[in-house]
Image 1: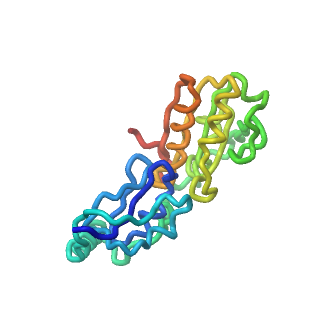
Image 2 (image 1 turned 60 degrees about the horizontal axis):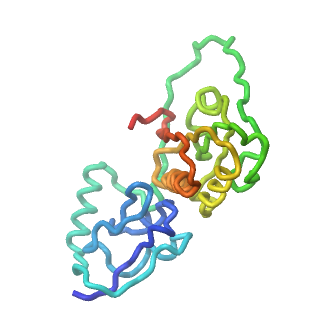
Image 3 (image 1 turned 180 degrees about the vertical axis):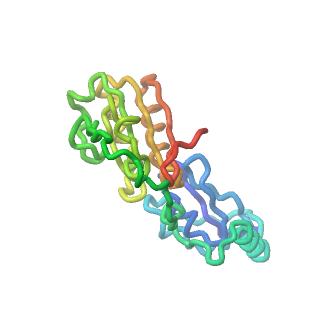
Length: 238
């Protein structure tokens, strides 16, 4: 049947995940850092996701699509709720869902633990504020990190920041395309490697996608890697 259904422009999508959270029917999923309409029969065509998109990547179109299956949507919601054993499912962004994190007690730990020295190698460190060319970028190993990683991972300075130039940002809060700034930094400087440090939440996919896009558009071959941190502060093995 011909009906109204949403259309997602992947080139504009920054991977924030706001649309997937706003779609109560579950028609949109985050895949490889991009929003995808994975169940056309779950899309009611009302467009609750449209105003949530900060980049204008979602629009309506009239085309051939399966009819909206309200019964299937309800069944999927009930199944998901049962599997997760959640009485009141979180309706907002997955990255804002409340979690209480309990860490091992350390009352009996030695009190002579040496103080940690900051490994921040330059200022400013926000992606939006750093210049595209600076002396500290020459021969630098870049660490491009999501803001929250500094608080989630206890030994961030020693394990990740040491010996690197650190740039930080949050694609959900900044609502900008970081790739434009990062590609200029890579083009204008002798960057030796890039490490992407992100959280496991979907909105961090936008940061990873921006860096990958910048690496591709820079025209340079630079070694890179992605490290993902869980919300309880552990490194997630791929």
